[in-house]
Image 1 (cartoon, one colour):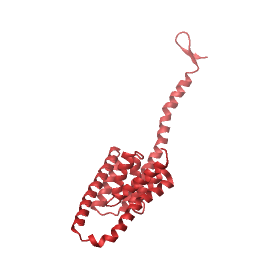
Image 2 (cartoon, rainbow, N blue to C red):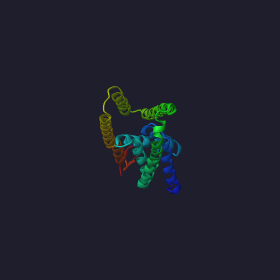
Image 3 (cartoon, one colour):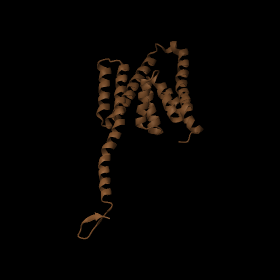
Image 4 (cartoon, rainbow, N blue to C red):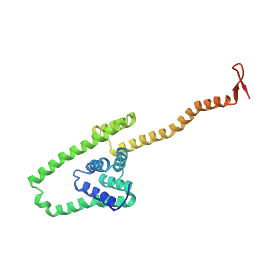
Length: 221
């Protein structure tokens, strides 16, 4: 990918537009980032986007800022992270500054309250769409542990009010344990698979120096 002025402008513009039209918190901007960077621009694949979202949720600070930093750094290093931070921070800074001057005027306005209630309904739909899409991606992997962790985490957070920090810590430890097991398994497979080939090579070497003699028998040279 060519990192010219057009690329950096597109990175800043994408972060600016996504932040300007994000209502309802950081989870909404995650959905918009997925549509923008994964489906439209095709800069990041689905699996990598899931990893970036997981890191954004686990790290301290707003999810929107964390996700923007990670996406910008992934695409163009420190300059890319700087541009995405500016693009994400500028819209709410400008909007909140303007609203602060007129807040007392429309604070109790019925039309404004109805507008925000409609936005809340739209935000709920967007977040639901993100959850379904990410859950479907995990289910397609067809591995028991990720699906079990997802289901148990949802149950613990929704029905038992388990602290989200504890859920993230346990999920992270399970993921690390799975990665360690996968890291050890290829070596074991290599050792296990080496025996048949060794036997075949030995058999071929045993017969390499023999020629058929008269009468159909074999003998050494």
